[in-house]
Length: 354
Ligand code: FNR
Image (cartoon, rainbow, N blue to C red; front, top):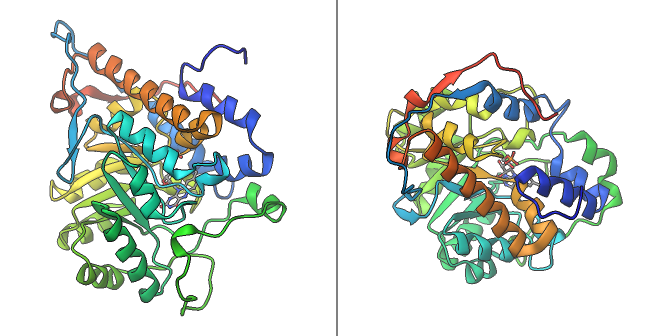
């Protein structure tokens, strides 16, 4: 790379790789197993092609929408990823500050480097908190109380991690790294459940969780119509279609390939979001056309953070938003309400940056 400023998210990836220690890099980019799902998350977007309309007045493009009622300036959210303090000193607080500057919603990780109260203090935009249920209700309840006290607008319960995926690059090197304690769990009693490497959670736990808080609870990590139907029956307000960025079970389908069946099964009962492999404005557009209300981005935010702290995250988000604006103009869709399934075709086109 030259010293030219980054012009897309892949430029940030290259800059971040050059900057951060290899052990940490392995952890960030890793997928589970052979990385099939990790690769497929990108390939699936590449197989979708757009059917642009012409002769439309696109002099004004409006990206604004709302997420569970909170107004946001674009359908791009920040996925929960921890621990960000390893990438820049202000960690998750820098990300919160950048999200606020762009008018985007951040989902803070339960495994954040900074406590949710500190992240909330840095945030000027809407904030949700992601939660793992480690099979231990008292600990989960304590985290929920911290999220409530911090003013989070919703909880995102991660449901795809009853055991943590085997990320083999990081398994080989994790002992070389001194991983920090999780700030949100500071001062809590030790877990009562037997210690396993995962966050086992069931529908019964969700039912219980709903009795202890009035915050909306979004499910993160649904990939099938069957689970979407069960969520809809319970009145779940939001679903994140996600395979955890390919970090849990290798060989599951790409999240954008799972999106249509989840959208159909939820049948308008809740908001549907998507994450996994979103790197281009056109990816955001494709997901919205297939029924997502918004997307979340994970690793690119970490690259921005590593390269230039809050300003790096701001730039990553701004680049993506600019690409989305261009894509909407070039497909003749001036508002998100104009983006629908007629925009989409599937192709045998084979193109890959890899
Ligand atoms: C994650 N992800 C994640 N998810 C979650 O629910 N809680 C968490 O603490 C984390 N932590 C985490 C750390 C790192 C380093 C990565 C890369 C990912 C998953 C994340 O929220 C999201 O689902 C994916 O990262 C989305 O895919 P992309 O955008 O990274 O391709």
